[in-house]
Amino acid sequence: MKKVIILGSTGSIGTQTLDIINENRDQFTVTALSCRSRVDDLIQQIREFSPEAVCVGKEEDAHRVQKLFPKLEVYYGDEGLISLANLDADIVLNALMGISGLAPTYRAIETGKDIALANKETLVAGGALVMNLVKQKKVRLLPVDSEHSAIFQCLEGNQDREIRRILLTASGGPFRNYTLEQLEEVTLDQALNHPKWSMGKKITIDSATMMNKGLEVIEAKWLFDVPTSKIEIHVHPESIVHSMVEFQDTSVLAQMGLPDMRIPISLALGYPKRLPYSGESLNFFDAGKTLHFEKPNPEVFRCIKLAYQAIETGGSYPIVLNGANEELVAMFLQKEIRFLDIQRTIERVLEEHTMATPNSVEEILAIDREARTVARKSALANR
Image 1 (cartoon, rainbow, N blue to C red):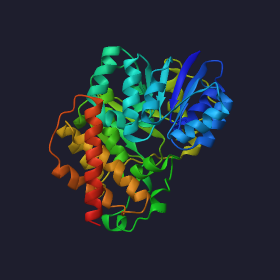
Image 2 (tube, rainbow, N blue to C red; image 1 turned 180 degrees about the vertical axis):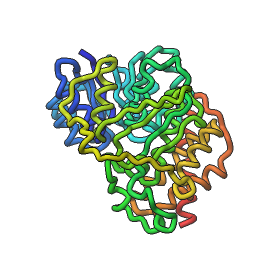
Image 3 (cartoon, one colour; image 1 turned 180 degrees about the horizontal axis):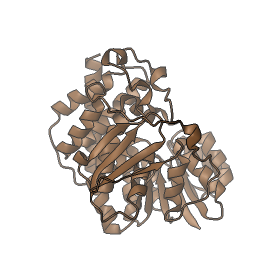
Image 4 (cartoon, helix red, strand yellow; image 1 turned 30 degrees about the vertical axis):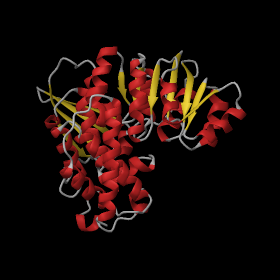
């Protein structure tokens, strides 16, 4: 029985992870769960999966849960997530949103646990620090993002073969053929209406701006130890090919499947085994006679260009990119700014940033906080 901790159990990835565990009760036991604010959903999960411990966002919510489950260990806040990461378990699935996933992931690796990573910001902000610790502790870092899971699968058995290119696919989001002029008029409701994937609000907006793909380029650089010059984004609206790898002999391996996050979740949880899954199989006769691939336009979707620039510059720039983006997406979701204000403000913030070289999680988080403050002020001043 694998002992599993799920950070972010009430979100899209977390609930789908519990679906997989529910289908494989003979192979997994749930050690701990966490949520930020969906406490009613967490209570239902506690009743169904009987974890040893949980973490919620606020102290008052912790008291509420503790009254309902007196024998349960109940934590709250960021320190509570660290406490969960310290518990005895085999694998931690990190489905937290944003930079909040960095510290508990780092702690879980320190304590020798494998990581199933659905929190790309952990590597965007802390890539060098995290990957050095992974090597030191000799744990597995298993990607849950569909694209990185695809690359991981293509590389199975090919670790010693030189990569020519990673072809990172993207759905293109709801605005893939838009001009800058059309993006000026984008509304919040339009940006939240993804054509292929069901995701949380933050990642859905990132998909619409294509920042999500920029962040995935940075994540792929750290996960697979390749320079960004070997990572190319291919817009693929059908979302059937989840990513590809080209080797030195120009042979290209692709991983395909329906757009269903339970597939990469299942692989990460069960690795090195593949778990049985009751989901629908890919039917090539129904999938269409053609699969389309297009180049993204980084002059329209400038977040792509900004992400490449940030990781190529290195140091604190990816932290600033990520922190500014998180703050600006939150502002857009509150209708404080317009859609294109996101990429325009990130560009200004990066231009004004002075390089730093963080050496700890605490230093990364301090840079992140400063980036958020600068981004908010800049966005409001330039509305």
